[in-house]
Image 1 (tube, rainbow, N blue to C red):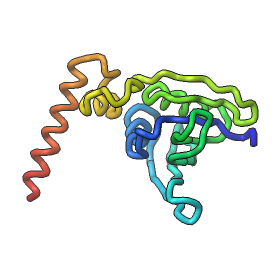
Image 2 (image 1 turned 90 degrees about the vertical axis):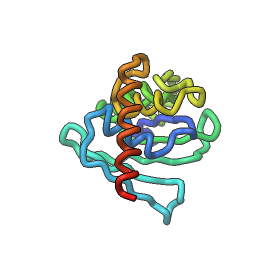
Image 3 (image 1 turned 180 degrees about the horizontal axis):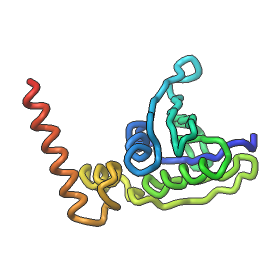
Length: 157
């Protein structure tokens, strides 16, 4: 070991939520998710480009972790990987481990760490990058986008 940076996040977050954070809050482009059913149905790889570098993020759902069952996210151990995982933690919250060889854990309280008590639209406003969840305008933008999505879906019927 000693070659990975890890983040342990609550099982309430889905891979789709993680993709929204990567797409809307970080420097990533060209995101693609691949499942590895031959390894485990609860294992995925998120492949993306960040600042010109191609990255592969391992996502282990429902994993045994230092905080019980959680989603474990791994990237290689370099400054960019550390910045990416810390940025994710600032939104979703989690337990950050800079080096899996050292075992030093840091709890990061995220913008959405209040969890299940947040309204759907407030959660989406943060995930979609409209704000930090602390303003009415970011919430309004999310609600308008949601209403437009519903209108568009109704037009396709």
